[in-house]
Image (cartoon, rainbow, N blue to C red; front, side, top):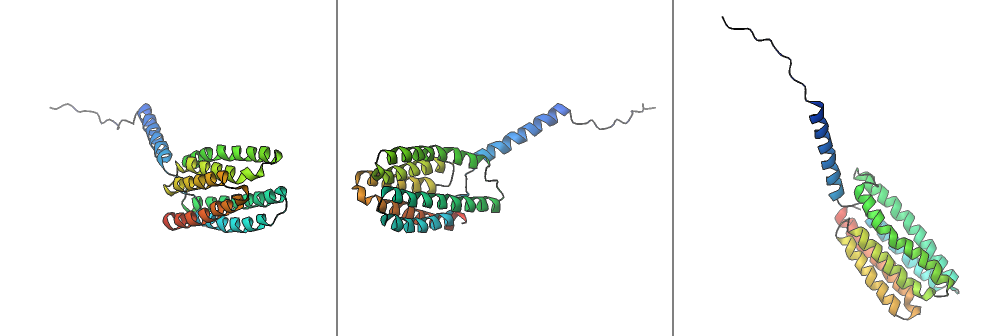
Length: 204
């Protein structure tokens, strides 16, 4: 007569194995998020910023003092930041990706240092009476910021940054009275052209 074997309950997964599996999944998700590109660069907002920059260039050209010229362009910068920030947040929400995801944070931390340097140099150059250098400095540093941030974004973004840097180089070595028109070409023309490309290829 055969022996009767007791029926055993199925063994539960060891807690340590389950914990390791969850850690591995978390690591995989974090790695995939870090490798992703920041795609919330706002194309149509770039077009709008370019149009307002052309208006700012016209208004700035009619100012009689360096302070008036600077005030116009600072107002344009604040308007551009507001428009682009709103559109960037809207685009990220539509894609279901938090704006401050890992790619977004990489983009921001790479973009910001050159902009901070630009703000500090603006104060120094204005106090020294060297406002004629500001168009070249602004265009170069903005282009540098875009190239750095674009390393974590779509490929057209670094290309735009390089074009801004070339425009800034021209502004630095051209006669000072041409500076406002370099600003129009860069912050106006380049934003419109590249913004339209980004909007068509990457969804707004």
